[in-house]
Image (cartoon, rainbow, N blue to C red; front, side):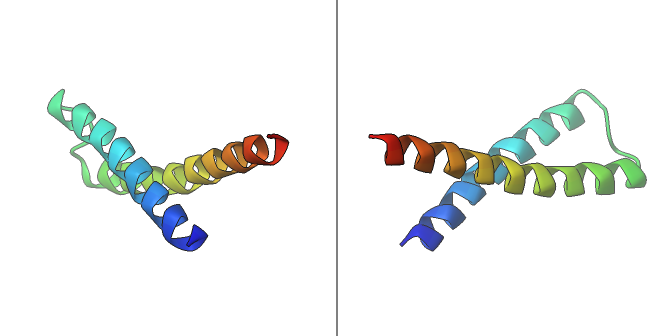
Length: 65
């Protein structure tokens, strides 16, 4: 169950960060191919990092209760 919840949390964080990426596209930033790749890899990396941090904090608070 925890693996499924981690995957669900990761998809939500990815969707949030990719939405921010699209907001930058709306203002005209990041359309060159190198920037597209860099922002895509950044979204993936930050998604994993923030999901791990979210789970670390969540499990730490849950263990303290």
